[in-house]
Amino acid sequence: MLRSGLVAVVGRANVGKSSLVNTLLGEKVSIVSPVAQTTRNLIRGILTEPRGQLVFLDTPGVHRARGSLGKIMNRTARSSVEGTDAVLLVVDASRPPAPEDRGWMTRLAREATPLIVALNKSDLPDAHADAYRAAWAEASAEAERAAPAWLPTSAATGAGLDRLLDTLFATVPEGPFWFPEDILSDYPRKLAIADVVREKLFGRLREDLPHAVAVWIDTLDEAEDGSWSVHGTVYVRKASQKGIVVGLKGRLLRAVCRAASRDLSEQFDRKVEVKLWVKVQPKWDENYWLLRQLGYVER
Image (cartoon, rainbow, N blue to C red; front, side, top):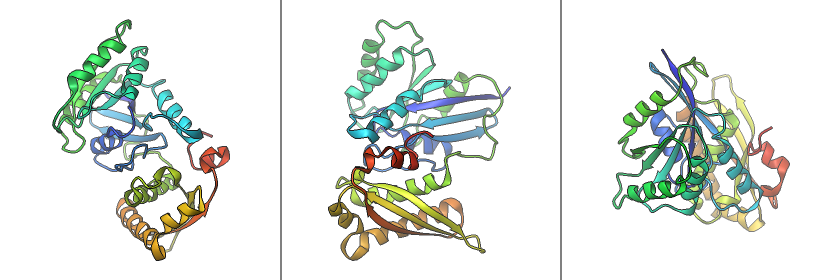
């Protein structure tokens, strides 16, 4: 009998949730970067195999929110566990537990949903698995729920992922597929393209101003030969930030367009040309209607 279920992938920012999901699926469905809070939307990655189907809900990392966007991201992450068949709490085992890790444990100790804890980055030195188990024991001291499964994993090397999948398939219920077998994600195409552009921006801006940047795909035109022409807008808060994103003589923005075009051409198996322009939109991250257009607020 086939098994099928929804798995909420949760945890604090920058612990490797998206990398773990991408590695499990064998394909890139979520963007990754060294910058915390890269994932802003709820992204569904779908793994189908002879045992059944797992639908991973890759969530934004919980962090100390500033402004409307941060609060929306935290709310999206925290609400993702509702109605799921299993929760995969991802922690960075190479670092001691942070307050956000303890916050997730306190929240999940009150939930009856089966819990698996992925001790990610266990391949790195100075692993802190015992500290996380102690933090869970403290958070769940008064909770009457089944103990979680603790599994060392590494999104970078793939270590422990077979055992993780075995545990997840054993946890979710028997039932039919949620999605057709050939679908990897139901994430809207324009939002997926915008995320790739944002990933390339993050890779070049680093800590300068990535959280002041948003991307919207205005048009996606398909030519007779199947190639795509993509036009998008990069939103920044201030005029001074526009100059940083554009770069000297437009070099940084052109480099981002080239990198995004290469990545998207490989991902969609067709020629893709990305063209971007930068627009100053003061307090875009406080504008409810723009946040809704960008996909950060559910319609």
